[in-house]
Every structure is written in structure tokens, then in C-alpha cells.
Length: 289
Length: 277
Image: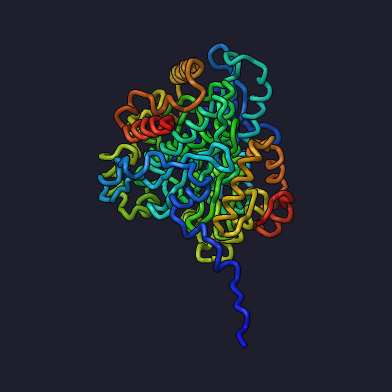
């Protein structure tokens, strides 16, 4: 007698994290509606890396795809975490800014175009330092301009996570989607340990890192909107929902008084316990799927 | 360059506004006041060191949670008060920048400094998009997340031209370590590769600045120098009012045509393909 074969769901699901940035972006669009813009065959590379003996990549690690999501106009802009840590260089940063600006232009002309940002990035590419930092400031500005007309949706799926200047872009997005494998913060644990010492942050303490930066915590404390399983179908469905929801009445990053009061109420005499903070700030609207 | 970060910012805040005391209810690390510039009044903002801050990782002039939310509060108050005024009557906002970095602390990460920084950048950018001239005066250091939180959303950026001015993504020692170079190698590369340089005169080549200014001793400005800086701020305000509300002046500047060819090329290509359906 044969025992019935039980195949758990995770065997059949299509992992999103295992996809390249390009495949991730493609997987969000309605079939047959998308095309990639300024792709690798346009050969617009970083003008700075080769001078430093580093091989450039012909898309500079930034993929732009335009098409329809749930029938609505949208553009996805994805940083490839496998190229230079998903870092923001002159070209990759300008690509994101330009795509956001074009979506704004279309939106102003009565064709609302949502943006989906796939952020797997350690922040500014130090080999292009000041042009990377300037690009982040420009991305922030252009994302805020588009946000007036159409939602800006950020996905942090992992495994690089979203750190440095680009974490501000997640912070001002209309909606942020995370997985349990994703991390979101301004400074990574190694940087804090280096700058402020191991007593401040022990970067080998995995449990601590996930308790602070992990997707479950960020959604739980209300600084991200939805925790999704590592499943390409579920992530695409979540994006469709947010595209249809449109621009929120008030963006989180406009709610200064609420969060200023929360910071004022913190006891800073010792380190802050992440679980307690999650309870205090708890986000009843944050969902899991 | 061993002077303490934040002292130049404080000195210039005092010189331009006549005050250097924090407002009631504000942390002692943020200076905010309304003062005259040209023939109008402007909101001046500055982040300064507070050695008694209840957040240990901001005590040397870093930008942390309280600083970001306080800046955002002041900027948003001015946006709300001037909501119904025409563009030419919207109050200018002047950010005096001398910040070591963002705060590198566990308290800050736990409570979401990424989000706090976003609210401040959002407020400054919203002010600019609403028509307020937003001017940054880089009086000392302008590092990384500190600059993104306080100053980098300005329509026009002014900076002094001396060796104490550093505008950069990361301080030398850390940047050298992460890119696996010695500090000497990093400095050498800075001479060849403008965006990597720590010299403000190289930074000026990137086309991001409105103007470089000079003072003999930035910690002790003379009355003539203060008058010159005030004049430059007034010019920057007038220029901002004539210009666009976005940051396109940065990549459309004369200097950017030389140093930001990659930016211009990718923008042109994307625009051509976007509309070619």
C-alpha cells in the first residue's frame, strides 16, 4: 500500500527571490504588455568603473520595464543586487530618475503611470561616490513628484535588502512590500559596528539583525505595508492591488507629528527592544499574505 | 581639519540670524528661526552637536531621529502657513549644512531612522515643489545620509571653498576600507575621478553647485563676509524663483555637460524609447 504523496506548497511555488532583477520586474506585468527600455543592447555603461579596473555591465545593474499591470499603465525599475551590490551609480541612478520623470510626464498628461521600484541595494556606489549620492537625491525628488499623481510601490524581497540612501526612497513610497527574507534600514549592521563599536551593534548577531531590520518587523511596526511570502504570483497580485488602490490619501512620510511624538515618547536610557516597539507602534492595517 | 563638526554651521547660523538658541520644545541639536534676507524673511535651519542629547549616536553633530522629524516639522509649518500665497511670496527656506553624517546607532535603526530621514527629505522637496525657494549653504561637512536628510533637496546649493568643506558619500577611512584601497590610493583616485574627490573644487565640476563662496576664517566670519554671503543667498533665492521646481538644473548645468555625460545619455535614450510605442 502506497502512502499518499504530500507535496508541500513551497515545492510548487515560484520563488521571487531566486529570480534576477530583470525576471522579477517582468513577472509583475500582464502578459504580452511589457517591453524593456534602455536594455543591455543599448550599452550605456558606467563611465567610471573601467577607469578603476572594475568591469562595467551593459545595463549598469538597473532594469527599466514599461507595460501594464492589472490593465493599468506602469513602469518597473529594478536594481540588480548581484551587480556591485545593487549600488547606485551615475547611470543606474539616472535611469531610475528618468523613468520616474517620464511616468510623471505621462501622469500629468492624463495617463497615470504607477512606478514599482525593486530595491536590492546597499546604497551609493562608492566608486562613483558623489554622483551616486547626487543620483539618490534626484531619485527622492522624482519619486515624490510622481507620488502626487500615481502610486510609487517599493518591493524589498531580499536577499541584499535595501540600505543606505535608497532606504529613504522606500520610506517615502506610497506602499512598501517586503518578504521575511528582506531587510530595510539606513545603516547596515557592519557599518554601525565599524562606526560606533561592537557594543552598539554586534554585526555577527543574526537574530538581532532580523529583529531590527527584517521584513516582519518593518511591516509589524507600520513602516512597511505588506508582508508577502517569497512567491512570484503572490507578489505580483499584491502589486496589482496597490496599483488599483492608487495614491493614498496621506502618505506615511507626511505624517510628521505622529512619528515625532512617538520618538519623543521613547525611553532612550538603554537600547530599544524591537518587539516592544512593534507592540507600541503596531500597525493594524499591515497585512500578511 | 581637526575642528569639531557643527561649529561652522552654528557660527553661520548666528551670523545670518543673530540667534543660536534652540526653540522651545525642540531638541538642542536643531536651530530654527525666521530672519531677514534681502527684503523678505526666511526660515533658517541648522543641525548642531548636542553633547547631552538623549540619543548617544548624534552627540557629535550627526543627524538622527529627533533632528529629522524636527526639521520636517518646521519646514511643513512654513508650507502650511504660506499655502495660499503666490509663488513669489512663498518664504525662502535656508538650510545651513555642517553635518558629520547620519546617526550610526542601534536605537536609530530600531526606531526607523530610514523613515525619519525620508520625512525630512520629503518636507524639503515638498517645499521646493510648492514654490518655496530652498537654499543650502554648505558651511562645513555634508556627508551621506546627513546631507540627504538636511539640504540635498534644495533648488540651489552654495558652498564655501576651503579645505574644511567636505561633501561626500562616505568619509575617507570607511570608503577606503569598503573599496579595498588605502587612503592614499583613494586620494590619488580623487584627482583623476571627480566624483570620488574630497575637494570641494572638484565637487563644483559636477554641476551641482550654484556658487562657491570664500571666507578667510569660516569659524569667525567678518561683517563684510556675512554681507557677501547674504547677497549670494539673495541671488540664489531670485534664481530659484525663476527656475523649475524640480532638480533638473543640476544635470542641465554647464559643468554637467562635461562631467555627467552618462546621465544625459541615459535620459535621452530612455525618453526616445519611452514615447516610441
